[in-house]
Length: 221
Image (cartoon, rainbow, N blue to C red; front, side):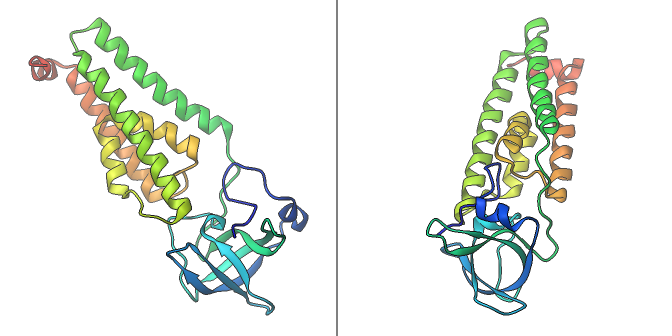
């Protein structure tokens, strides 16, 4: 029952391409949150339009009956009309993916892990430090992948506090890579602000470990 067009990096359906940039406004007439789909009643009248959670640009918000929604028209696999690239009031369509931003995030993550590797090899910093960053990054990457999958299916999500905690504990390089790979948590500004704060705090902790006090702290390791 899903539309062909899903809001991610995959190509837009031919049906939507034919509609160009024309968008329609309506209200959520019904919504089944357990099955993650509902119907939109166009404001200018006409038949109700099917909409799946994957059609929404911001899947962090769950639609509710009566909410105003803006959408484009597409078709499902059976050729039936459905909504695509839908946005609730207050949301915006995502901007086209910038390859330079993705490369920059991956570069920062990989460069930091290389710096940690060099520090471990050339100083008395314990190998456990590098292992901790790698393991934390892998766990965080998996957490983002699972949360993205849950957002698409409408199942239980990983809390943002948990994602921030993983980043704070050293998983932020994995988070940076996952954000770009899955196009997840790249638009929500409050989340982005807190995320970069966790990165700054973690980097400050890493630099402290390179001081004499930090060296004494790591000595038992």
